[in-house]
Length: 412
Image 1 (cartoon, helix red, strand yellow):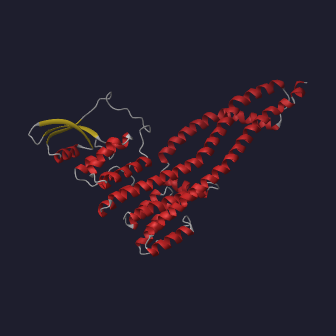
Image 2 (cartoon, one colour):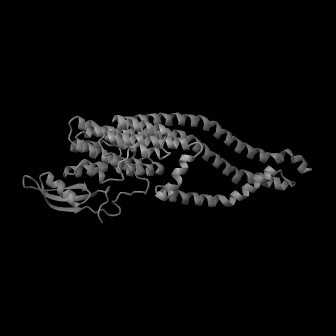
Image 3 (cartoon, helix red, strand yellow):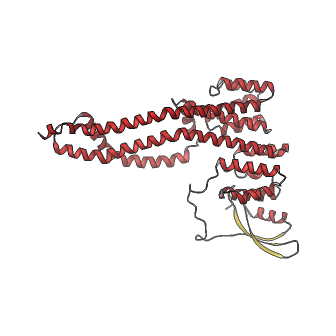
């Protein structure tokens, strides 16, 4: 079976070096042809190349979903370090070797080692990175390709780093806004389920032994407790099954077509999600335009990187309109997801020939808007969640203790 795009294998080789001596060793590469090409580029004549096969006990154990992930922050650091080294006069091969050795993320270090091997055989950096689509996004690959053609690779890599650093900050702001309400909501659910499953039955048994009619709130609470005993195992199994299904299908187009429009219409968070998507779209679009990527190709990519299928579809429609000879702002105005201010600023950028600068200004404005919105949401949601949690738990406690107020009547 052939290696996948991101998989490397270990090969044992035997070569005759420049001095005519027979030398043996090991190399990691995608296939035997890559090993032979690398050995020939080093001035050696390959005699034999064979894959190293490990027994089951020797293989590295990998648990699905538990491997080290390559995040956007890792890519930002890699791009900035690579730009610095290339700008300092180091060759791409030497720079990739240093990155592969010093990168803390082992998965990224392994991929960079493979990329270095491909570049060593004469493959362009953008092509070598493109062989790992699960690691390097299309935006990064296309920008590096434009930098290679234009001769300003170091500047493009800095733009990639700045773009991804801004994206990391944006995601951190969203997480800061979502973490508190999600944690409080989960605590409320756990507290409610715990009381219904463990505390209410104890009180219900005591009330039943006393006899008499219980107050309506207490009867409702006891009924919910009986229902929870049956529903809890079903809900647990359904929750686990849904989590597996969601992880597998959350990126399917059919799922996104239903969920993404709803996200933009949510009463509290919809406006935030819209600002995040617009900020991401304009930032990526501006970065690609300033790096020399053709506008049609840029529109094809930035829609996918926006994170919302509404903007992705709008971007494709704008691309088709621009290809037919229309201006950029006319088709943009036909899609409500782009605010009028964004359309007007892009129109000014087109007229003045500074589209990339205007797009960056729009993204900076919406980054500030996202920060302000998250702060407002946090200050609003905190007291609301505390009030909801207090009302829920407090109401259950009051319903449990209401019969005790009549305990003497029940005993009598």
